[in-house]
Length: 109
Length: 113
Image (cartoon, rainbow over all chains, first blue to last red; front, side, top):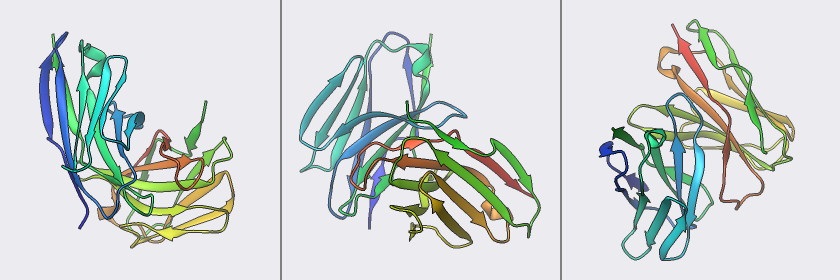
């Protein structure tokens, strides 16, 4: 079956770095996505990886290892506004997104 | 900016009622999706559409139907609402079938009593 696993909740300190891991199993693979969702709001797109390696976008970076079925989202210089849920999703061979349950990130001052 | 709007942010309905959730996108996107989001379960795909008058079942279509009469509008219908359909419903759109970014509406929190 198809499955996405990510931690339920993480806590980090303002100004620090946090890494949110995601493992996936899908029928075929057309890329790995990260979305951010603030409480009560819609998810918004953060990143997309289809090739192995690290993609950097400002304070956020996303890594993919296709052979390991593994990705992580790295957030640097954490700010209070980064408190949100981070959703990992893998696109299967039919271009359907398989979603993880999300990781709630709590930032403490 | 892409804008996806949903007809209601909050909705309360009674068991057995027929419920319509409307979604409109303003960027001429081909694809539209309906998801429900429940704590601990992530987003689950109910139905999607790649074109006008076209619909495909997602992972959990039971108890739901959809309509896409115009490209910009995708409606989700609960034929006879039940308490287990209490959830957050999210509509999304994307430009083409293999587009990687989906744009989400603000969501409708539906409570069925």
